[in-house]
Structure formats: C-alpha cells, structure tokens
Length: 116
Image 1: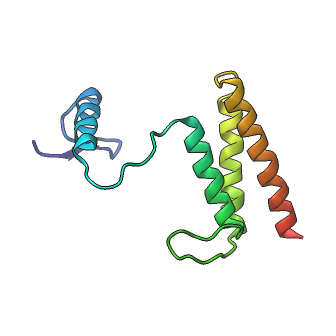
Image 2: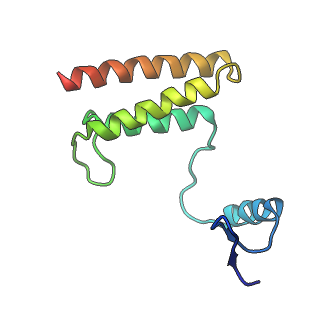
C-alpha cells in the first residue's frame, strides 16, 4: 500500500493503530540476536538514570568506553525524570514511586556537585 502524509505531516500506511501494533509485535518476535530484558517502568527509569550518570561523567559511555561530561544533557535527563515523577503521581506502585524519588534525589545532588 502506498504511504502518504496527512495534513499533520504524519506518515501513514492506511493501517489502523491496532494493525501496526500487531505488525510490530510480530516483527519483534522474529528478531535475532541478544535478547534485552523486558521493558517496564523500572527499567525505563534505570535507563534514564544510567544516561544521566554517563552525561555527568560518572560512568563510561558504552559506545566509546570513555568518560566525558555533558552537564546540559545530564540536566535535561534529570528534568525528564522530574517530569515523569509529576505526570505519574498517583499511578505508580509504592516501590516505583520510592525508586524514582531516590534516583532523582541522588542525580540532583550529583549534578549540583559536578557544577561546583
């Protein structure tokens, strides 16, 4: 089926969102190579935490093996976590809420220390 852009500029194939989701799940099952852990909210938060730590220069960048600082990117990632805390308030388990609160506390503290 030919792809076309609608007035919003989105790329469409003429398939419904449900059909595209089924196609995605099917393609995902056909993937070969190393299997990554199942993505859930906690894994997503840990991923953002790791990104912030890399940007703060506290962890090596996995693609280069080098440590380097990018405090603007670190701040942006910390701000994303803060936004997630605000937007998910009342929708998280106690464990998820505590984890996010503690990660944000630690990252904010490390960010301030890195700027001094």
